[in-house]
Structure formats: C-alpha cells, structure tokens
Amino acid sequence: MFSGSVWKNIAVLGIVALISGITVFTVHAITKGYIIKSESRYAKRFLFQVAPNANYTNDILTDTINIPKKYFSMLGIESGEIHLVKINGKLISIIVPSIAYDGYNGKIKILVGINLDGSIVSVRVVAHKETQELGDKMEVVKSDWILNFNKKSLNNLEPKSWKVKKYGGYFDQFTGATITPSAIIKQIHETLKYYEMDKSRIIKELDVFNEIKVSNNFEGGN
Amino acid sequence: MYIRSYKSILNNGIWEENQGLILFLGLCPLIAVSNSVVKALGLSIATMFVLLFSNITISLIKKRVSGILKIPIFIIIIATFTTIIELFMKVFMYELYILLGIFIPLIIVNGLILNRAEIFACKNSVVKSAFDGLIFGMGFSAVLITLSAVREILSVGKIFINMDLLFGSAAVDWSITIFSEGYSFLLFMLPPGAFILLGFLIALKNLIDGKVNTLSGNERSSLKKETKRVRTTGPVA
Image (tube, rainbow over all chains, first blue to last red; front, side):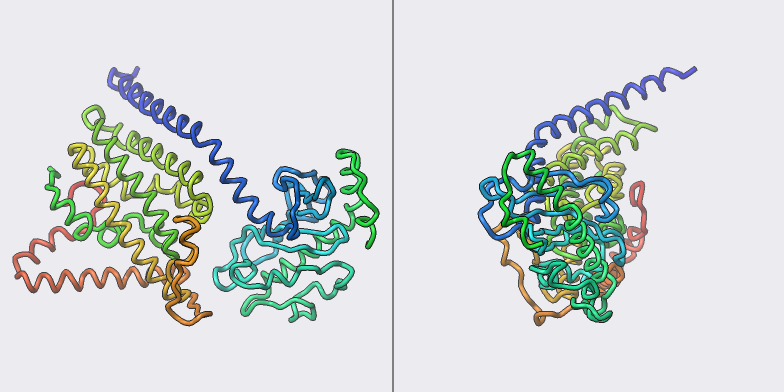
C-alpha cells in the first residue's frame, strides 16, 4: 500500500493541475472570440489577393461550396472548400485551394482564383517549407513571379507550355531553383483542369441553392 | 545557499551567467528564431512573460512544494503560463505567432526557465524572484535580439523587416536597407550561420572579460575561473 506521503503528493499534484486547468480554461474562454476574429482576418488576407479587384458584396471567407471527394487527389487536398466571389448575388469568380507535393521540401499550399471563363484571376502561395531565399521567390513579397499566372488559362496556354523555360515551357524558373516552380506550375495546371471538369456542377449547384439564374455570359467562353 | 543581492542578480543575469552565452540554455530557439529581429522580439516577449510569472508563482508556493513533486509542479506552472501567452499572441499578433510556430509551445521545455525556477525562485522571496526572472529574461533576450539583428543585416542586407507584425501598421516602413538592394547571403539565413555568429558573440564576451580582468588585477580572474563552469542545475558555487 501507499504510505501517507504518497497520498499527500497525489493530492498536491492534483490541486496544482486543477488550478492550472481552471486558469487556462478561463483565459481560453475569454480570448476565444478574439482568436476566431484574428484567424479569419489572417485567412481573408490571402483570399482578397486572389479575388478580382472589384466590390464584391458577399463574405468570401464563409460563402463556400464543397468539393466532391473524387477531385481531392487531383487538387492534392484532404479537405477544403471552394470560396465564392459574388457581386449582388451573381457569381463572378471562385477560389480553389490546392496543394503541390513535389516541391523541394513538403507541401506547398496554394490558392487559385479562377474566373468563370476558366482564366486565372491570381495565384498565391499560402504556406510552404522551401529553402529560404533560394526557393521562396514564389512568395509575392519576394518577387513578381507568381503574378505571371494572372489571366492564363487552358485556352491561351497549351499543355506543353505549363512548364519552366528550362524544359521548353512558358514560365521562368528562379535562379538556382527549378523543382519548386515546376511543382507549382504543375499544380496550378491541375487546378485549372479540375475547374474545367467541375465547372458545370459548381454553376448548377449555385443555381439550385441560391435560386439565382447565372446569366449566359458566364457560361459562355468555354 | 543561493541568496543574492539585487546588484548581483543584475550582474549575473545580464553578463556573468548570461543564459545564452555562458550556460547555453535555450540554444534551440536561439538558433532557430534569430533569423529576423521581429521573430526574436516576439519570442523574447513570450519567454520573458513566462519566466517572470513562473518565477513569481513558484516563489509564492515554495514552502508547500518539496522533494519529488518539485519538477512536475514547476513544469505544470510553466506550461500554464506558456499556454496563456500563446493564446494572447493569437489574439494580438496572429501572423507573428504563425511565423514562430512550434517555438512558442517549446518555451515549456526551455531549460532557462526551469533553471531559474529550480535554483532561484524556489529559494527566494517573491520580489527577488520577479526581479531575477526579469533580468535573466533580459539577458537571454539581449543575446537573441543582437544575434538576429546581425543575421538580418548579413543575410539580406536589411534590418527591422516586417516590424508591422509586432507594432501594427505604423511600423510598415521601419525597414532600413544597409547593403545594396538584392544583396543576399544564404549562410547567415540558415542555422550554421547562427552558430558561427554565436561563436563570435561568445568570443567577444570573453575578450571583454579578459580586458576587464587585466585592468582589475589577478585576484578577480582567479575567482572567475571557479564561476565559469557550465552547470545547468544546482547553484554555481
């Protein structure tokens, strides 16, 4: 059997753990609301950058539709939603999350903004672990490279051009790095292909749920 | 016993027993986070907060805790304050919190904080423990911030990049370019550069100590040899 001092120790440790737990719980309860606010502010920053430069009227962070599971492997994601950009209820573009796996070091998370006609609004790298200063030129704060994708689509760039210049493609590589840009280019290309395949569903689903007729203008141009 | 005057706490925390330069405690965050000043400042604030409040709390309960319970209870207290500062950082500087990543929760196992709890706070008064936490935190932060400033200048030729993450939009253009635009030196951005520069900082400290010793005579240097041993637990005789 335990001697008396062991019981005393258990009691002391228990009390300390209890006080600690209550303290953390209280602080968490107080800060919870503020933390959700900062998280959504952070997430929105990137969404704003890949949305068209217009006065959309919806909350692009929360206005989303789901992505069917069968496309997850194409986009490299395990979960995720399409963010919708609307003006007065009319869909003008979408934002698709996507992950490139064949970079130099782990996942490269990107957000691709796509116009309804299948051309790119803009792309941003949200998170990556590539080598600092060598493989991080895809960050918009480091170089303009990522802006090369603006306005590109499957129509104005043929499949063999979706590569770095070194391999006969359209896009620049960074000095000293071809693996990282190649991985990003490939994944953006995949994302556009996904949109082509899933486009009719997205537009139809919006029609049903929002009871808004998407005008023919938006369906044209494919 | 390990009882000290305020003056000797000040002297030891900042210089003689500097946790970064002499005891090499907290070496992991020191190397990993010192690649930019704003990250170094963020981690310094968090570490000092935890050190100050864990020292105060441990000093308050020192009479009730003894024997085998000491270390587990210290860890619980340190973990509590680390979680609290983590939550606060999420509220006030979310982006900096994301940048610092794992190194905020890792404050719990930073040897520097447990070291001060074990050898000082559990034997001294609350006010003295608070002062000790503050000063030793400042000593560590000074090394971290100095190292990060040197690394930032040598690696990208600029200093005070992205200070708006900590000080808000007023600090957006605090960045000062020191070398020409486009300058970049990868070595100092990566951990090996940090180790090399830390070595230079230690050499500089020893150089200054040497100069001071020759000025003030030999009796001081013989005394110092004794106190320079690297000890991570227990009082330094």
